[in-house]
Length: 471
Image (cartoon, rainbow, N blue to C red; front, side, top):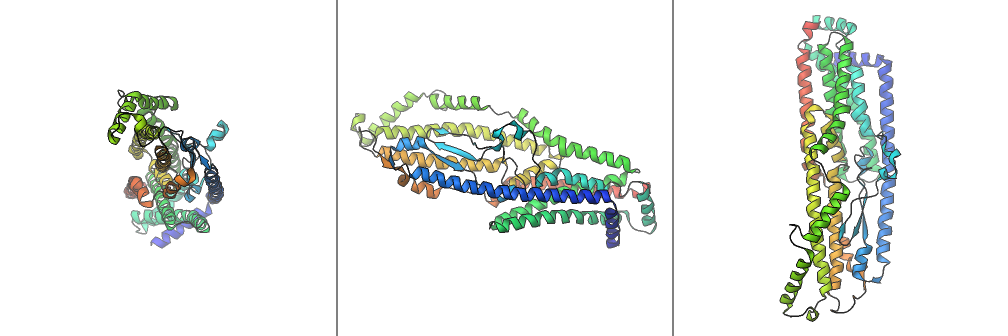
């Protein structure tokens, strides 16, 4: 019985030329966006590899120089570009892809394509993710709004009910038929993504990420399918069914995802760049508690150093006090930056939790987090990159400061080959976000997507129980 209903529903859907051509256009546009994203990802990865090589060569070619001068010369950390960013670039164009690493300072990320000018930020780029998140639900609505509503559908429904077919079986047959179409579309995207991963020798976890991405999109699109069938079952006429579904799409797919971030930014504001810089400068000058000025801290450092080595004059220290001061100052500066960055990131996390709290208003909100998180293009992945970059910056700067500490006391700083000093730090650098770390951040969004799906299926089954009244 189910197979008969499914076959009949497929025949009806295929007869509608408008829906058929819209589906073909959406699939082709989405696949084109995905392939374009793969090409862009490969170009960015190649540029990153060349930039890393050039940065390492510039560092090595310094030769024998002053260690602290080399620390100010600095390095550059380049953000890894996830292969799945081809599917969902997320915040990739707006949060920067490189960080300048130097002594006494934690720089913000730069290298954003959006920095090229306002013309590039005036439009939302069309991606495979936007095709599935925004336009695929419209196609589902146009395909399914008249399945039960409308005069022609009612005539067929009366015959089916008269034949003794339970209403819920009718609904499930149509749900499975149209759900097969959803699975087919996602299968095409998944196949294209898997081929791209295979051609680029992606690691196994990336295939798992792709699979979890498709599961999330499947739950999202099936949610719209179940809601569409449920509304269609409740409406006598096709016109109110279509109007109600399009209003729901407009509110949940377009309005709430745009209003939500603005609301979260108002509730949990973050300081502007100049204000943030001033706050950090005050903490560096006056201490983290605001009552420990720099000169007092330096006096304590002198006293500790002389007590440690049992001397009464700085000139009698067996180590270079200038190096000790640089090492201590770097640690103090890093603590000040870290305190303010932690507060900043905490506010971003609060904004994210508030967006999750708004998820009952829109299934797209948890999907956006799920998709960008698995594609490693969300803010959490960016924060992990910034933390890795800062750990490396602190390690190589302090290694150079140690070279100053070991230099002859009371003499100008000796020049050294800095590439040899930082070689061990270079070998220990680098960290990628594991699938387990992503799962710990995103499991709640997955639960929210499944909750939306469960609610919508339950609603559709309840609506199907009322088909006898409308037939």
